[in-house]
Image 1: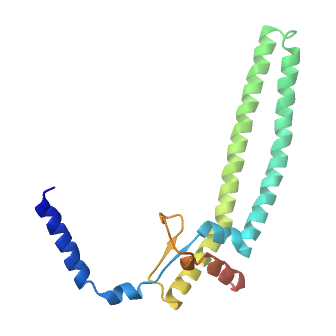
Image 2 (image 1 turned 180 degrees about the vertical axis):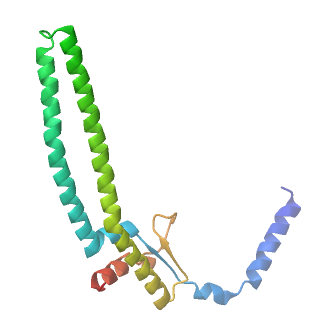
Image 3 (image 1 turned 180 degrees about the horizontal axis):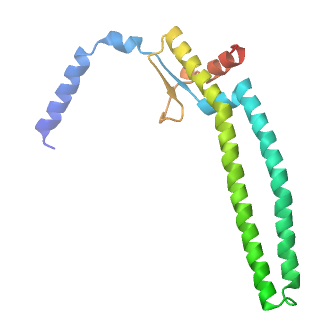
Length: 174
């Protein structure tokens, strides 16, 4: 770029800075919240995680027995492979493949069900978190409250409202 353009940009920036109201800068109050930490740190989030862990453990137990049956089927086939006829061996391989596919589908269905259950449990909490953030923003005069992992590269610890949100959620009656 030419020197003229550089000078023009510098003069323009100085002019904008000179006329920008200093009061607007002084009144801006910013804060940020780590939503994941809020979900994991508040009682409602901990309760939801405990329930999800229980559901997950139950599903894992059910799946484990099916997986053990499948592994036994594979071992039996491997042990009998040399004595089976070609047709019987092919039939066993088809049965193993079918069972494996069924197990994979069952696992995917269980994971999808867990995700739906998690979303069902977390959705009301997310709404309460949003309401609490709005309340804090309005009552304490924040101009903006941002999510921590939403592109913030630096922020002063004093701007972190995460623990305030957790405290309000744990003390607030629904």
